[in-house]
View 1: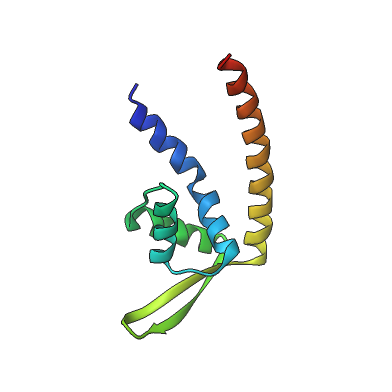
View 2: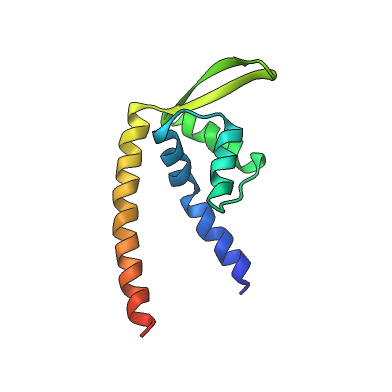
Length: 111
C-alpha cells in the first residue's frame, strides 16, 4: 500500500468539514477557499472544489451570491445557511470526539 494513497483518502474525508469551517468565518469565492486550503497544506484543485460546493449548495448547506468584480467576471461568493451552520456544529463535535479517540490510541502506540 502506498502512503500517498492513504494520505489522499484522509484529506478527502475532511475536506467538506474544512470548507464549511472556512465559510463559517466569512463568505468566500472559490479561489479564496482554495488559497485558504493551500495555506493549510491541503492542496485542492478547482475540479475537486466546484462539484463539492455544488453538492453542498444542493443540500442547502450553502448559499451564494454574485458580486461584480473590477478585475474580471462576476464572482460567486459562498456562505453557510442556518442548516449549514447546524451541520458544521455537528461535524465539529464529531471531529473533536474522533480527534480525542485517535490521539488516545496513537499516544498509547508510541510508547
